[in-house]
Image (cartoon, rainbow, N blue to C red; front, top):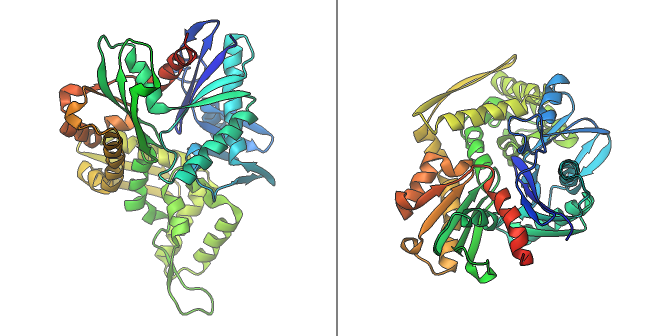
Length: 423
């Protein structure tokens, strides 16, 4: 049979494997300049409309070009948003489907070069849910289908990511077990309840799949929404000319400001001009100063390094009670101290939604936590202490198991291909 690629297209990182010449091939070296060549960060950098860099080269060229141009990160998270059509770059319209398609095409080209053959078939991982709204979820999948066609794939199957992770864990089982798979990425938290054994896979082995569109990026965003966004005008007040009402920054702006995938779109013309007008009409010098910092963040292309600093702080709080946040850039000098207790309090709503989807997964299969034999967690968010502690509370520490943070889904997708073909 012809070669089939397995693609784990993630919010933060992407990997590619293959079923080639009757053999399962693990992660391919699609980003040779990365510290792990099999792991390509899901980044696109356009110095201008006619040139694009990917993964580690996107970061290095972005820095070399003094952060001019457009860097896109976490763009997968826009898929269920029917109001987000894409962006404009040098008067050229880039739809979201084409942004995703360009990235998938590059993954395809690099995999083909590694395998020495052309490929037009793919199995691509998908979250259990792109959105809690079924219409938005279907819309996101439709967009992914269009992006895959844009990339040149003629045949595509989308496999839930937690189901793929289950195939990876299945390799090490010696007897049948009822297993809960928790797969945590940058954008989604996904769960699969499945009976796993050495026997051939049957679709009825999957008892339930559920999830929610919240994970690592949502945890990053709480640092912005709860404190750091104030430095960039989230609470700035203004009064329009000839008006008497004191107004505050509208949610349409503050919501973009708080999220790493959305903040780049503050640079789009209509929003940008609105913020300029707010700055002119600011009530106090403090309000003006905050918006000046926002303009520096946007105009000097400091969004990416700023959110990298937030991510670093979040990771530090996994191992210590407090962490200093420090960002030193001329005009944007911010120093704050964050504690684990603050992080837990701010993230409570996100945590509750993640575990509500877990409860829904168990309930749909009519399974109680004590009936689950093994809980397998993959992805960085699953290692956040207060998330992991909740799993320990529900299932017991002895039933928890972790695998490779990044490779489990890809490994499972590759294993899925011959199983689905009955090979």
